[in-house]
Image 1 (cartoon, rainbow, N blue to C red):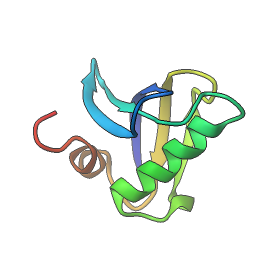
Image 2: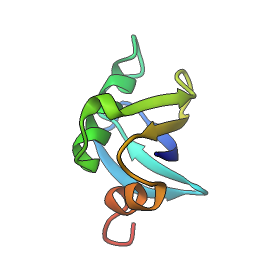
Image 3: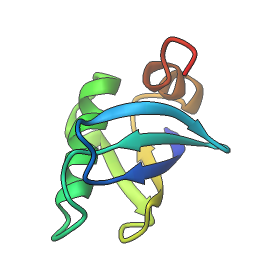
Length: 89
């Protein structure tokens, strides 16, 4: 199981991984940070990018914060990080 620190930027032009922000992976999310829309979009995006079922990705802490800790089943942290941070971001 992987645990990853994320820095989220809601209301972006498009949903994408930007690169690293300190020790966290910085991700822009197109959805607004209201009514859990950005969190739902984040989990869907992560499942797609990591190529794992959506039920295997969850927010462990930071539900109402830009700084989040997520867990993904089926991958270790290194493999998950490599899949998200491509092309030397």
